[in-house]
Image (cartoon, rainbow, N blue to C red):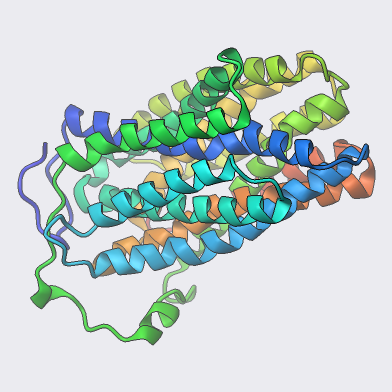
Length: 418
């Protein structure tokens, strides 16, 4: 584990392999608990409750519930970051929020499996996403707190690589074990707690002395969320790029089960098909994140990787729009894995290098994380509206490609980072 460090100093000591291991393990639990419901459990639960034969109503209901949860993410991410910047607990600034978020996340998932109404599902999923935001905002801030710049691309890859692994592992466990909805939710909730615990128990988190804590005024939590784009243009452009690329990814992936069911009419094999596509995506995503994260560290280049990654995502979406075929979807899954894996690793490192103030890393990264979670939450609603309006999925994937291209262009004006 790393040696002593001070709360606001720029880290210079490289983190160890042991630190990276428990960091990656925690993210595996967090991503599994968030994405398994999005990709499989929530659509199944909503479908089971709706008696209509119009499948678009199920898509729209899923989108509305995701959007409501997205509003919670919009608030909780920066709020948690700001409060963790000021936390003087003897356990450190970030750990109390990681622990509290994990407990809320897990408990809400268990409650989610017991719901019998759309309102109950919406409430429980919103609470679950709030817990996800608390835990991920605080653990993301540890990158800026403890990881030196020359190591951030590789370490950030271990935020993104577990995303694909967690999605696949969660779906595999639920499908191949033949679990019911409540059993599926119980499984991912339990694994979340088990996988986050090593990071809480085995890493250090420097305590913030009370004398160094900035004075607190409630309105600062609101005014602090505004970062002037004229004074900090690199932060603003990175944020815009993140929003667009993640929205493009959300449009292309969060309705994938519905695309298999109703776009390709593969109702009998949809769950197995989803596993195959996720496996391909996993392999390319993980390899891309780890390889390009390290290469970007060595070359000290971030922007080029982000730019190319966005265009690979656009290519994958266009393939699905122009040739709606399962074989083509397999190829698109590979392109999407390479593109989004590279983006997630390198863009996370880029985000830590354009922060306006080292004293507010948690809050500023919380704002950056909004650009990750909110598009994922609102993507299903926007996608559902596109599908309902056009009566198919081609418009959805074309929109995904356009948004991803714009996200790649948005990173070009960043000047302080190559």
